Image 1: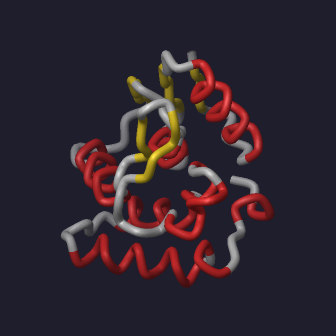
Image 2: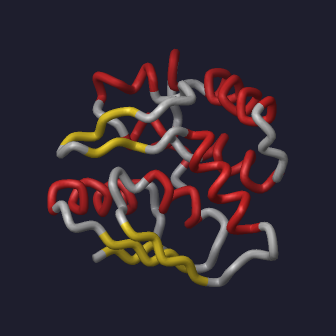
Length: 140
């Protein structure tokens, strides 16, 4: 993932991300791989700029079109469950939304296939994947 693009300041800084990681640990997330990825993936880039200061709260946030970016705990929990029996080579995600879950998965598996029916969300997610240098995500 492109380090220059994912850097944050203030409420999107690594220190703020670390506080989120501590909350995830307190809620039972223990897989170091998941915690490492959750600390690296820039969630603030997957929400509107006006909500960036809230990106590392452990809550879902609106992304438009009646959709939300999932609560970080839920993303971590689903990802931890996926890795429980080993790391799959390929993952299919239905409902790309903001693209955050796909970006987390792309840091852990060889290939992520994701599908989004809402064109503006699809377009924005594809642009983010490109900006972040995530070349192992295929979206339709």
